[in-house]
Length: 511
Ligand code: NAI
Ligand code: DG6
Image 1: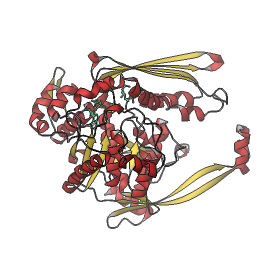
Image 2 (image 1 turned 60 degrees about the vertical axis):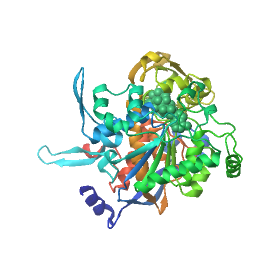
Image 3 (image 1 turned 30 degrees about the horizontal axis):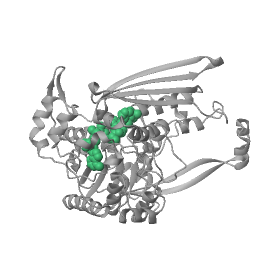
Image 4 (image 1 turned 90 degrees about the vertical axis):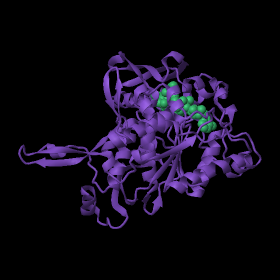
């Protein structure tokens, strides 16, 4: 209520079903002459910089839908942990471990456990301004994850209790308490194209839809429609095995439709994505493969549908985009990054086959490009490449508890070398699931928003914060920086809520 009042005071109309806000974006626009010169001393020539001001009207539908979440890969480590974790929160469960009694929480979720700096309040006793931080989930009307209706597909017919046991992520006492609920959830038969994932996955595939591309898409659409009939809105999230890249990319709609109708071998992810687009439901891609071919993006645009991806940025890569913000942002020349991982879950097994590993390597490998491009002093032309390698090994013994070992070597003052190493050990799925929850909640919210009368799609690029290889509506403009991704997401939520943005100069504290 307070937020709505603030919105009303600042920007007016908050009636009916919509939160409406107006935002004036101010950009410093450098002219071409400046850009050709590329000299920082030009900054003193104010004539080369102008301020571009644009006004945006943002409209958010306040009605929170009953949301159906359909996971592709429901019985995998992420899928099973997503279902059990949400159930445990919904039922406010406690369970025993050797370290004592534990309770369900949503730690690691930006929407459920994150706060944003929203502004200041005046403390009349101390006579100073104090920070105001608001929970992200209170900024705008968002779906509560405990209210998700969850279903999905898996090539393995194991029920969700068996899947949780197989995943070895959650504690036995918790699973024992959830046994009845989990046993009642069984994955729907899946679209399966075995050639696109590792051959070592074949023994899992006992729950597949047989048929042509068209028959499979039709069946997936029926599944989505059935879910739609039980709730208000559906989101489909791919958290199935990493597929190999499909090359050449499908670049035209004619080619896409020809390949579907003539039953060409297409990755399963493309079939799910097409079904989602045709049903006009948001499709999120949590794995690195190139599902979003040019023709798929165009198809989503034509159908008025939404997509976002790719590849959850949950641990090592998230840390990397923070380290590069810290190092390059401090004027230090990051010169070599070597990232090792080993893990022993089914994801690691699938990635142990080179064709799938290559997709992951591309996704993990491109995340420093924009940080390097941002600094021509450290990385002038001809010296703008750094050593960056990614190595992944499958070590069954460690299960889902992935080890990530990274070495960052940087050139510092007078060519000294500064080497920082990090060692991260954590269940991969406990890092990924909160991101899955966030992208579903924020993705759904973004489908209820309009800017200057238009929807945000087809690509929901504000979700980039959660992805290693973000796609955007402007394919040449991609931000990987953790700080910039978070800032743009937070600022967008704030202006949509009608909160004024703070320039961050802290000038108010100078006098
Ligand atoms: P997982 O191997 O345990 O689960 C994948 C599930 O997908 C399996 O149950 C498998 O049977 C199922 N599956 C395979 N092909 C399918 C199809 N065509 N249709 C429906 N189901 C299918 O893997 P996990 O650990 O759950 O990871 C899932 C994906 O998320 C992987 O691609 C992984 O690379 C990606 N990812 C995971 C992150 C993490 O932190 N856990 C972070 C970034 C990405
Ligand atoms: C090994 O790298 C397995 C992968 O699936 C990763 O664990 C996953 O992509 C998470 O990557 P990151 O770099 O965000 O920790």
